[in-house]
Amino acid sequence: MLLMKLEAKEKFAFLQLAHYLARIDNEYRNEEIDIILEYCSEMGIDNDDFFNMNDFDLEYILQTFKTKYSKKIVILELMILIYADEKYNIKEENVVIKISKYFSLSQKDLTAASKWGKTIASLYKQGKIFIES
Image 1: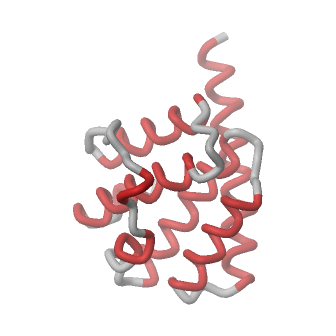
Image 2: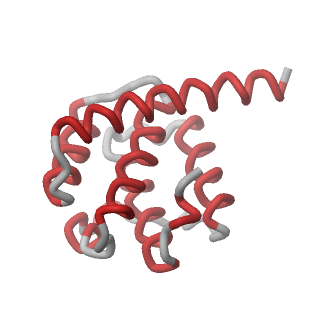
């Protein structure tokens, strides 16, 4: 929804970040795969199926996002991914906290993003059920 507003370099960085977050709990579920594929479609980029957790550098990727605008888009969209499988575990929470601190986002911003992501993930799931039934 908002990812198309990112710059090209930010889109590829976001995709890496999404793959990392989807795998951080060691459960890369179908719901997360669907959301990542939706992200790719929206951004007009191919999915990187060869993501390697061992090669990922969170801080390096986060440096890509320079503006408050792009940082807020990233956190909003990642919250959709987090809630896609209806699980928000401690590993995901820790990553989101690291990202929000790195981006200098307030707790208020993080709470708002979390609520938004949960709502959008639920609506996405409902829409998908509607379309497929």
